[in-house]
Image 1 (cartoon, rainbow, N blue to C red):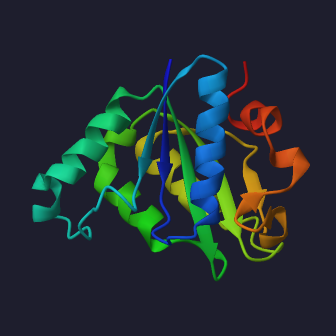
Image 2 (cartoon, rainbow, N blue to C red; image 1 turned 90 degrees about the horizontal axis):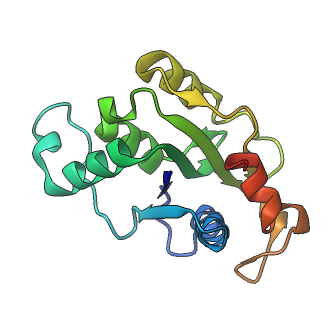
Length: 166
C-alpha cells in the first residue's frame, strides 16, 4: 500500500505541515510506504482551468495522486475554511483523485472550525467519488508548543489509527 500525504500549507511555520511530518514518520515506523508532498517545496501554479495542467509540477502532483492507494490532506484552516493552497491542489489534482480514500489533518488557530473540511470532503465525494475517512485529526493552536506537537492524544499511534488503521 502506497500512501500519500499532501501538506498544503505555504507557511514556513506551518502546524499542518508539522502534523503531516508526524504522520509520515509514524507510517514509516510501521513499515508502510509513504510519499510526502510539501507544497512549500513543490511550487504549483494557480489553477486557471487550462494551461496550468501542462506545468511539470502539476504533472508530478497528479502522478503521485494516481499512484497512491490512500491520501491524507494536511490543511491549515483559515477563517473557518481550508487554505487556498489546499483548494488549488485539489483543483490541479482533478481526476487523479477519482476513487481514492482520503483522510484529513487539520490545523487551526481555534477550536470552532472543526467542520471546515466538510465542503471540501463533500466535493471530493461527489465530484471524484472519493471515500472520505469520517474521522479526521483536528488540532487547534493549543496542541502545539514551541513549534512542536504537544497534544498527547494526537501523537504517534493515535493519529495513525484515525487515518491509517491497521
